[in-house]
Image 1 (cartoon, rainbow, N blue to C red):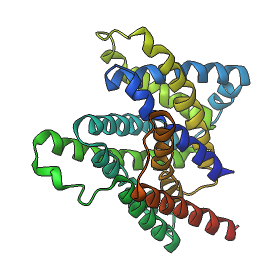
Image 2: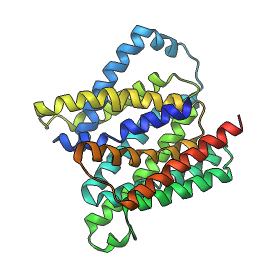
Image 3: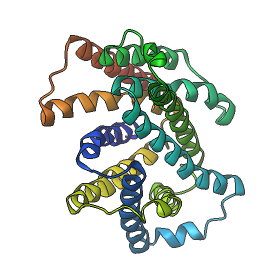
Image 4: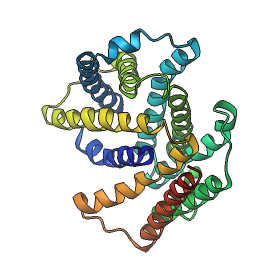
Length: 289
């Protein structure tokens, strides 16, 4: 069930681009309002279920508390850098550089989580990277580095967002067995809201943006993260990073449904490679019990 929860969460997130296109607000405002809406929903759920009281009574070690606070900082860094990349370079460059995350996870997981990297994981990462390359149809994603500082900054931001996402994966993994998933996401959204609060005072929110922000708060910032954190209880960090490649597959399908964008042969081949890499991880996990 852990794999299924992570895949569902990732597919929900794959629709994020459609909503971003509909909301005419700065990136920090979009993140703030979706986090605020999600935080209120999560607080009510915690109070009604009694989970908030249970979490407050836990005697978690200081290290777990540290990672609980670090998680939203990684989330903000990842999201802001990723959105910056979308605004300053091509989507292909932004997405491809963002998906350096599995490489960062593979490097850091043995040091931070003491996880052993299996040959199957490396092979799956290779297939996933090749599949994403086909989907983006990019022969040389770094060829535009000389076309101007704005383009270069976008590409660098995309890669750094991959690093931020890798840290987010690893920090959540460290506390997924200590705190409930709903509490982790609530703390993440609460701290995110507080940090971004000063940036929204001079920005007027258009009324047509509210329905999209509500949907984002419920689905993208509550349901998807809760499923994702729950999945971490039985899925390794490296495996979760590889399963993250389902996101571009979901984005292609949604673009076809809502924007009538028909993927080419390269995109279909890339999607097949990504799906196969996820199958490899799940199959190996099931064989090992």
